[in-house]
Image 1 (cartoon, one colour):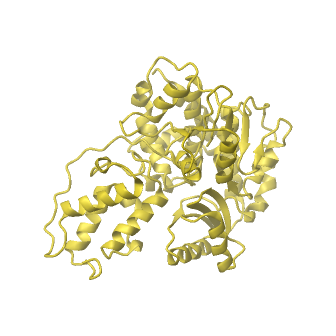
Image 2 (cartoon, rainbow, N blue to C red):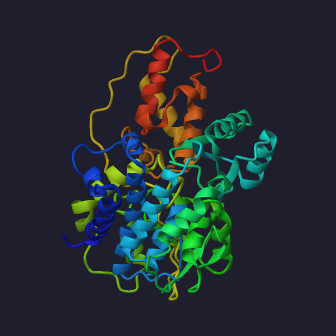
Image 3 (cartoon, rainbow, N blue to C red):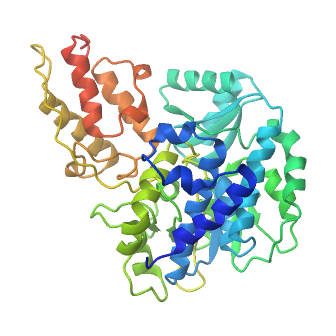
Amino acid sequence: MKYQQVGTTFKAVDAVARERFGNAVSAVLFDGVPLTADDLVEQPGWVSQLAVYASAVAAWRILRDNGLRPRILVGHSLGEIPALVAAGVFSVEDGARVVAERLRTLEEADLPTGRMAALTLDGQRTRRLLDLLDDPAVVVAAENHDRQTVISGPESSVRAALRVARELNAGGLLLASPFAFHNPALEPVRAPFAARIGGLLRQAPDTDVYSPILRRAYRADDDLAALLAEHLVRPVDFRGTVRGLYEAGVTTFVEAGGLGALGRCVARVLPEADDLTIRSTFTLEADGRLGVERAVAGLAEDPAPDTFERFWAAYGTRLVARVQAGLAASAVPLAGPAEPAPATAAAPSPSPVEPAQTGMPTPNGTPPRTGAPVAPSPAPAGAPDREELFATVRALYAQALEYPEEVFTEEVLLEAELGIDSVKQVELLTRVTGRYGLPPSDVRLSDHDTVGKVVDLLHAHLVSGGVSSAAA
């Protein structure tokens, strides 16, 4: 295998997983039947957390080994750990130990069940909504862009906030995060976590690493254990970080990891910018090429002569199809989780290159699936047939997302192949199901991950006589 970065990264992370949890991440991800998104969410938390971490580090190492030289690294939430590894602060193994101890400390603490949710509101409107609830346990955990803010808190309170948001015609989605991160309720865990990682070896960063949580770059004399523990209780300001980088002259962002959610966040933070270059790694481009090929070909100082197809053929399918696609449901946008989902680093460079490395959760690149289209059932008189429904839904998705209609085939995966994040999918599902009188609460996002499946849902609803008078 020509590109060994994924294999060597997962080998190092597997050693830590066996040391801390008694099993290897690779054994869960790559052996046996491929995992679906729901399957991965049901795995122990250490599997998804270490998978996100390993994916981000592997992506970064591929970019680095192909000549990419960032000016600055930025991590989102969990993604700050792989960003520090990318800067040489921690070894790959010790970065994995930080991730492992973070999770173990939380699992061993006696904390109430918490959840996180992404709302399609900006930070200011989200805070007003939370003021209406008058529940101090629910807080803003992350501001990703003007149309996505993440909240965290007790499960009942987060669900209440989602109900209020929907009454205000705002979209919202529960995230499959194992804990309510970035919430002061995790304060009891902060000191124990810092103590567990305080003895890990660290080096001065060889590249600046900016923290959207601390809102400054890490310094060589920082107490890293204490600062990483603060991440548990402080919010993420990704929106402000991206805008600050752009105002400082950064125009190129390269996301290291899957899903491409952080890159889309950058574009939504800076909709007025006409000089942005945004690249991803483990996402498929419209022409079927893996995103990292464009990144290294267009930005690297001395790109390797070999193409990335070797890596994709040997490892990429499994990594993206089984890990990254599954993580779409487990994280907020970007590094780590997403995004969330989620989901690590943003990177600009000292040379003309100014890329952004990210490491998050988040998952993409599942190869196109094949299969015969579902045969349409006859529709009752007055109801549109399946072909007409497909044309309508495809046109709606294309218009809302500003994609060419031909991109939306029956079987193309909305998130894994087109990079449409979960929150946007919820908005679109709500729009099309509402148009035909189907309550959004009856729809599971993970069961309708292609346009064809959305059309099947609507068609089944209509042929069963469920078309509403308003839709008719």
